[in-house]
Length: 190
Figure 1 (cartoon, rainbow, N blue to C red):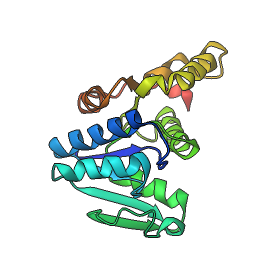
Figure 2 (figure 1 turned 45 degrees about the horizontal axis):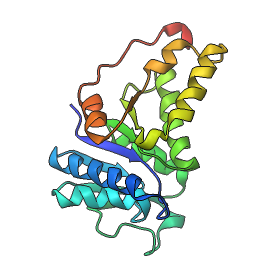
Figure 3 (figure 1 turned 135 degrees about the horizontal axis):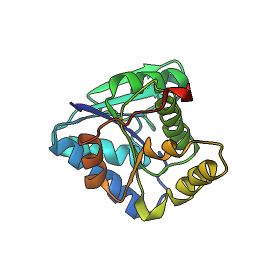
């Protein structure tokens, strides 16, 4: 049973409104469903939108912030729990440990790196937790195309594409993780 969902997303305040609206909707839906949010701990950008959306519906927000980001201009001071880590690697480990599923909203290099680490762990059978991308305005089309090319050129097995979901919005992404059944990964991958 899913109780805590980690959301990877942007901390940029400069992104278009549609991305902020989607992040807020995701947060509201998490709160309505009684799912705890585990996320990067910032009040900025999509991170802040998700956290505030969860709180609008009485949900619990756990932020995981590396020590060098712990400043009033960045941290979400209203978090129910704010865990401060030594660095980014420890941050990811804590987010993974506290979560039962992962949702990725549009973001930059850090967001992509976090999601790719989970995808790699799934391929190595180090986790069976669901991972889904919310493809707002086709943001992840290039990534999906690149992963397909890896398969086509034999750099990755076709089963790689079964290790994650791509959904158009928050409702579908939550349906994906709540109805997720882990697929069998061939042992010869290891």
